Image (cartoon, rainbow, N blue to C red; front, top):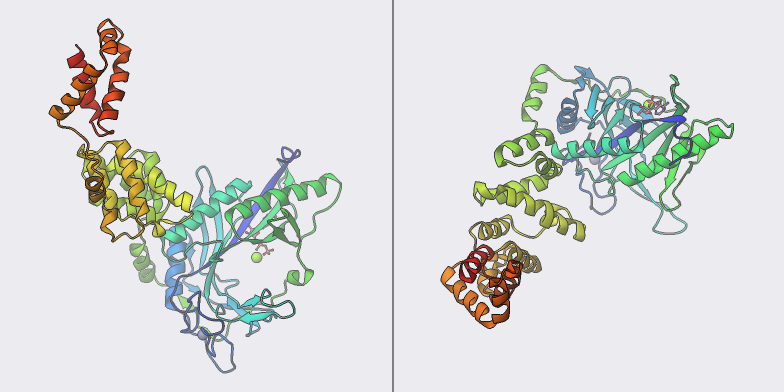
Length: 484
Ligand code: ADP
Ligand code: ZN
Ligand code: MG
């Protein structure tokens, strides 16, 4: 932490681009598929050939409305597109279609735990192509598949004050776009891209300081690290009597420094003007209502429902609903078990399932234990057929079977095969208890003489003799009654 941070206050505003999951591009019928060979998902429209006309993809409007309505934005009844002009080899038209002074969504907000962050605007635009410098040392290749892929840009008010708040804002925004099913939310793969605007001012000052914009932030951690460094850099400049110059910075995650970008990239004169080839986007009350009604259950509501339907503590409900797909997995597991085991299912999901996701660095989509098999395992515990400890053993066996259709992953089969069924038959257990007492006359005498703490010794012996399968409660009861 910077020594001078008590003296200064950072001011942060984020501009986030989210790639929409529509099947086709924003203004033509080309596919948005990610892994197609270079320059195969292109047509005269997205290549900007003369004489072609763009046609707006209605789904893009639906998608941006979902986010706009979920963040309490005002939806403009009539919004228009604008051309943002600049030259770049991966921009064949020489301009990007975007929205400028009449964006479709304005004036919303996202609530952090203790704070509301304003959303200035959310608008639609198209992506550019991609220049690739890594294929050879003296050539740059251009892939135009991404040209015209639909993006939305979410611009926050300068309401963010710390790198932690920036991180939290992004986390909630990501969660929201994933829940709304409009973006896959993957920052590392570029489906979410964040530019961070930051300035510092003396605490108590009213006027904002001069801001710098940090680009090249491709993970949540990079955003918060870059902000920390940029804040320190700016305070350093001011403290040594310097002045902040308004410029675009890039963050080098390896060297952990922010540095100015080539000045070419800063020449911000886009000569925006209204796009003459697209008609005004008109949103009537009906359309808004339809989208409103179609909005899925969002994390907060889902957590509330989990508390009510599964009788879970708030903590569990929040953890389980952080990720939509994990929440769905949990609900599927619960379909296969009794109400009395919902908390057990929550515990298993939060610990055993999430641990594997962490260890393997995979998402729940890649988790290979079938929900039905986890339900069966929980049922075996609930029915007293296996103890918790044995269940963990069985779980390890299940994990070893990667094919979820393989009957070898079914815990019932594992338990049968390995003969792990818990001994609950008190007649059987009694035999073992009696044998252990016979085998240990000295300890028996001491126990009878008042050394009751030796009970643990006997329990251990019985459990060992039963290979861990004896029901511990029955063992305890029998020992106490037989030892007298
Ligand atoms: P520009 O005209 O440079 O694009 P905008 O006013 O459009 O600037 O704001 C872009 C982003 O920068 C927004 O997210 C906004 O909240 C943020 N921002 C604006 N002024 C400041 C400032 N002084 N310090 C930090 N962030 C700022
Ligand atoms: Zn096309
Ligand atoms: Mg701006």
